[in-house]
Structures are given as C-alpha cells and as structure tokens.
Length: 123
Figure 1 (cartoon, helix red, strand yellow):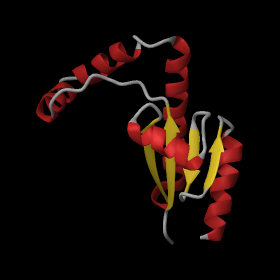
Figure 2 (figure 1 turned 60 degrees about the vertical axis):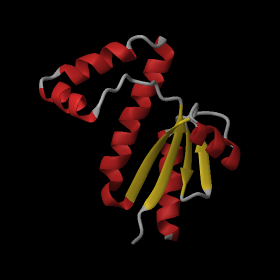
Figure 3 (figure 1 turned 180 degrees about the vertical axis):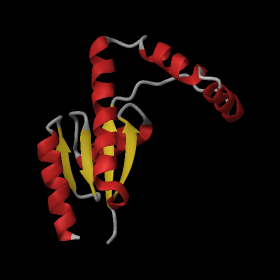
C-alpha cells in the first residue's frame, strides 16, 4: 500500500543553524538542545505553545501510522508555504493537506485522524 503524504503548513519558529559539522559536534556534546531551547524561548508564549503542540502531534501521527505516512512540515512564512497556502486555499494554521487533495485547518486531532483513516480506506 502506498503511504499517505501529509503536508503540514504552519508557523515554524526559525532556530539558529550552523554548518553541518558544527551541528554534529554541538549535538554530540549536548549543546544543540540547550541552544535550540534558548532560541525557542525568544518567541512569544502562544507561538511556542502552538509549536510544541504541533511537534508532539506530528510525533504521535508518525508513531501511529509509521511507514503508512510521509509527513512534510512547511513553514507558512516561507515561499513554499505561501505558495502551498494559496494553491490549496488554506489561510488558517496549522493546515494539513492529505495526498494533495483533502485539507483540514485546525487543532482537532480526532477530525484529522478521521480524514487520514478515510484516505487510507480509499487507497
């Protein structure tokens, strides 16, 4: 069975990144998480909460559907995010596009799960 393709368009905080080798070293010595948490703390509380909620939700979806789903996160403020928002006519975030066809905007996990289950049944 072909996996579902889920695009998630949302506001994504930009975290400071360095070169790949520096990232690897920082990760190995435990500095990357500390730096990323510091960067994230620079954002307003509501944006941090939304980001952490969405991150946990994406992890849940990934664990639940495993190899039956491919998830791509797109920053709504990026050029691709603006393009995809216009293309799919979504202007509330987070927005979820399933297999380039079905869409859902909001934070209702049960509603998104029902759409995913429906799409899996059609595949």
